[in-house]
Image (tube, rainbow over all chains, first blue to last red):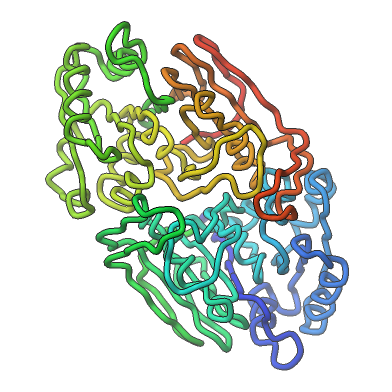
Length: 266
Length: 266
């Protein structure tokens, strides 16, 4: 018997099409079993969690999922309730909505749900997240930051995320909010990292075999620090621009695949 | 044949005694083999790396180590030189000096040396670091921050560190620089984390069997977020103080041991 294969991880850049072709949301339903899909929506990041959760549940039902549950966790006690275990044991996919990734991680970090997400993902359950839900997937999560194209020393604040991926630092609403500077800053701190900046209505699909594919109407900007030669981020005065030499950047669009990033994920 | 046991990890809070009893530095030499110890000093974090490196080399030689090499890496090309492999293959301990942890990690992150540190640590090599060298051990590293006892939203900046420990966020010069606020803030972001605030001339010794011991003249403050019930860190305006409910705090001094933190390390 072979070891179980982990699931798909699908960060989405926010504002994905919910009304017309719904390519991204449909892709998630299909990956998770189509008519056999059993989905859990976690809207906890949002300030309007109930409404948002119901609205995703309706969409996933329209797209043909067999079962969709909305799990609106709003305190840490709920996130530790053992009654939740069967729900996750049966789920084929979990979708985390937008909102505030810091709110999401302070609610879920170190709880039973965070544990279930990691374990079940390794056993084959898929996890998608949009906007805040995408950011929270990173082990090194962008908590907040400033806009702008030029990296500068204190423009990005990192925090420990849900750690579904180790090496990718996910950013979202990427071109819409002009976030190249903060993503490059995040990667410059430790060039072992790879930044993934996802535009709105765009997803970066991380497959179990460590191949990566872009789907949707925007781009994904990959900032790869592995061959970085130099940065002065440690020595510039606090909010000043920093120098970065040798960072590799890829711009990917719908259908593009990356097979050879050669990095462990998960 | 049993799997190799990992080494000791020994973060030190900075300003350890270098001239009189040298308890901490001597402890490191003894853990690393005493008269058989083969040590590598990495002074790269420092702005005066050559002098500082030589000074530690002299001390470790006086304390009886069989061999001590100073490896003053000052650019990423040096950190990727394959000629360094034999040095690490023979070393029984590596010591990282103080200076600036961001400088250290931008030099070493993703290089051959970072890889060797992780691999050889898992195979039994010990790693000590003081001040910046201690901070850099964390996977979620405190890059910089503000002093003060009250946690507030943007008082701490985290960055991806060398990841020798997953769950401990190490802080140093802890009481001397009044850093409880920033450590609690770091843990509040994701309560799965445990903060370890180490005073000057004090070490937190992480043994291969996941027991922990304090040595030295100061204290270690452990901030354990696992049972945290609530925080409003996501919703307060940027530099305002935050609420944190249910954080557990331990204050430990010389000789204290913790056996039951129940956390995976490494």
